[in-house]
Length: 251
Image (cartoon, rainbow, N blue to C red; front, top):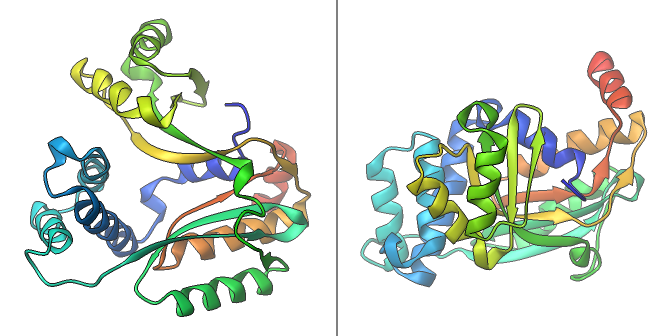
């Protein structure tokens, strides 16, 4: 995928299995709550909520948890009011970092993000300093065993997708944000099982990183993604397979 950073690939390979389930549930509950607050509690009329519920189910979240999160969002149950914020900065080697956060305490969140970046040799920047590098796109991944590339390509493109590429044992389908829901529904209606379906940010250019900086960046991104207030963390660094192998061998 053009502009897809090494971190994006690493994240999708790692998947939910490497993450703490409690952390995953916390982030999904926040997303469901905010989506319901903004667009209402009916997933049929709220694409963002529908996508969040799909993510919850793919992570085996109990239905009761989903229902409570929706009711907190709509005000039927009392809950914490989260605000959405984005943060931008730089990591080791000058790699751009873009963060999407949901927090009930902005001062705490920005302080902790600044500290994490600074400890890793990076810094928090002004809004807009790197955001232009990351384009919002719909991203859907499907295992290659699920359907032939030609059939899936025809189905996805007819529904409005921009591109389909094979990455390892998955197809990665990218869409414009406004076409994401139509493509997702076309695959769902065709019985195509989706590993991932989300709105993401794809870097339009990448920065090559050496082993030392790469190791520091991977550690930093893990810390950021593990932070309770950070929903998603993006970076534009790229690491060659040789450097990645050296990092894994020496870690």
